[in-house]
Amino acid sequence: MTIERKNFNAKERSSFFQCSFFSHFFFYLFFAFFVCFAGNISAQNLKELNNRIQTGNVEQKREALFQIRNLETEEASRIAIPALRDKSEIVRATAAFSIIFLPKAEAAQILLPNLQDKSEFVRRETAYALGKAGDSSVVNSLLQILNKDKILEVRTASAIALGEIGDISAVDDLVKILEKKPIETNEFLRRVAARSIGQIAQIIQTDETKLLTPKNFLPEKYKDLKQPKYLYLEKEFPVFTQASNVLKTVLQNENETDDARREAAFALGAIGDETSISILQSKLNDKDAYLAEISREAILKIEFLQTLKQTK
Image: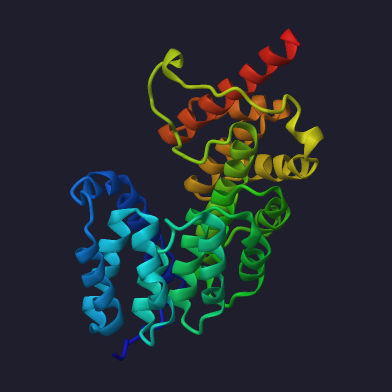
């Protein structure tokens, strides 16, 4: 099967990739509703899926991989492994998310070779899937993709994955992205870099990988504040000091996109940077209601941390 490709200009590439990003978000949002219909899969059903993977055409293989993905079982994921080496790039790309229900270390090692695939589509989906697998053994490989891949969408997928894995060693490279001047072609990557820095801080502090900004628009008493592991995160991990300084610059820069400033506010709250409170307070009445609410949540996290420090 031959796949026709279009050379997108910068704006089209950014728009296309954002659609891809949000399609993944909505897929996982409704994932639980679909999986409940899978029920108990029989050995015969697994055999049929395996036959489609081995001998079907491209569309039959993709359909089988979607069914495997929805089963959310290790047994089904094993059937998808051969599809990662299929001659069709669309099959290889589709297979990535069907592997993630293996033990995470195993899934990561099976997926890893496809980060070097000749197809940018396969590399991008592999990076996404490695983030969902969540194994830190692939962080260095993702950092190489982040810094060296020629395709912006692949680099951005790597930045997303690094945030989901939550390894401290990724922060420095993510900060370097934000230290560069914001331009139209890198605006989505900057937004993701800021978000991933905050997500890494959140995972280190609370082990919580789920991320929603803002959490809600409800009164303070309905905000769920998690007990942090470290009262002084920046002392434990000094890289967050430089991250905070850069994030404050992003938050105050009117040339940044609304999304980038929102994620910077979230990240400052996740880090617990007390020196950012006044900047966050200046955003509480911002015309961007989302930025205002995210800033409010960030302040609540920092004040909660301050209260804990006073009781020690």
